[in-house]
Image 1 (tube, rainbow, N blue to C red):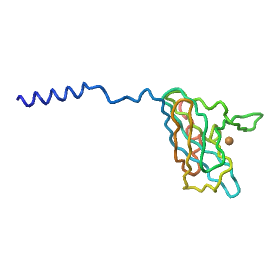
Image 2 (image 1 turned 60 degrees about the vertical axis):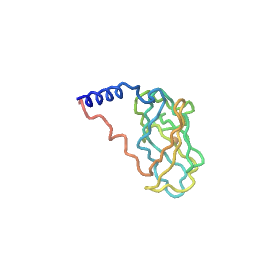
Image 3 (image 1 turned 30 degrees about the vertical axis):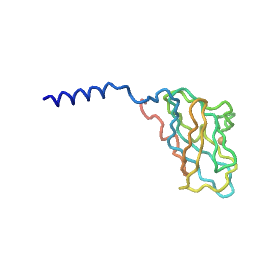
Image 4 (image 1 turned 180 degrees about the horizontal axis):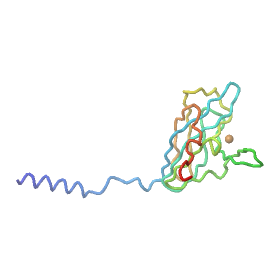
Length: 157
Ligand SMILES: [Cu+2]
């Protein structure tokens, strides 16, 4: 009986000890589903797509990759019925806790001056930098990204 009491006292102490260093305060961005389109022979430009979720309000600032001379964060928009894209010089906003998809037809990471042709099944290293969070390095797969149409809302009508 006495032994049992001691054991429960130990358990109670463990439960009350302060939690190990919490990381909730750190700005962290998680990256999922990174994929770069393959480059056909002779083409040295391609787009990469991924989904970013920031723990706090943050901004995707820059991208770089050893696979290309240059990588840029691009925004896309329709102008005069034409899809145009340009570098997001001020970065892309990442609201806290919200999954922000860089997807075909929208924002993306552009690789310029791709050194070796990217073939489906390869991987491409990308390093992303943020206004607050530490840089994140991801291995993007090479392949055709899923079209955003798959995410269309079919409910309600
Ligand atoms: Cu682009």
